[in-house]
Image (tube, rainbow over all chains, first blue to last red; front, side, top):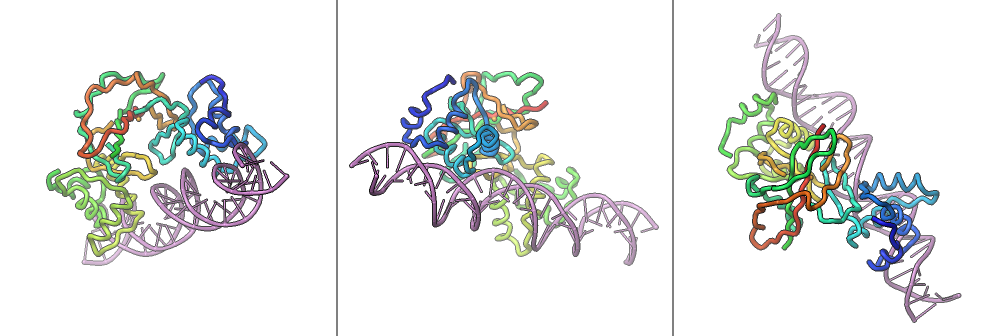
Length: 135
Length: 135
DNA sequence: TTTCACTTTAGAATAATTATAAACTAGTTT
DNA sequence: AAACTAGTTTATAATTATTCTAAAGTGAAA
């Protein structure tokens, strides 16, 4: 992502550009490559980078606000940490969030035609598809 | 799944068939249909069903032991609860669990050819593919 | 500049899970 | 069948991630 007008980005999504939000937004969005982080790691990085300490709760608030505005997407992975991703292009579980219910899909009811190679030195352990449901 | 020999199942995976394990295994595996649960829901169901109370920690231990033995699989979903699934047929996130690192896959590097219909009254909100990596 | 709804903050609260260490027990050995 | 022991269970404390609360702070409109 190219350097962008942070203030415009915030205002256009009805997020008052406070000092904290601007600082976090700059940190997240003024970079070339996709950036993955947890709230914890973001907090550490921000603490290291600047002198003014932003409260952890504010980081939670802000990250969620950015997510709600579509500037971040959330990815849940094994290990009980929520990861957020500056890449908001659509990623890819039947999971009914209304009822918090899982419904099985037989493996052969999904056919994947094209799949990327694993990164260098890594192998594909397995592939999991989640189809999220709505009413 | 048909009614099975619980003791054999436990012994064959080097799990000493204790009173608690047998009770939990019967509850989980002596059923026709796939069963989804969280540790919390399983605990409630077991408490309701029997008079003898099994410690929550034991339920965690047992469920993890069953998972390690391949009798249960784990599915992580939004909302920070771990769900377990008696359906151990292979399900379908690049996530490198060695480094706890996420690597993006462009949406068009994965093509899904066949996809099931959403259950009655539900719509597909989105589809997410996780490719888990190993070394 | 005054006002006020929106924000931030520290700290308490909650929720899910794991660690601890003492008590218990299945299964083997005497 | 009593003794032994490694594997288990248990209550409770600890940990980790996250959310709540309520007081203090602050953009931005009037």
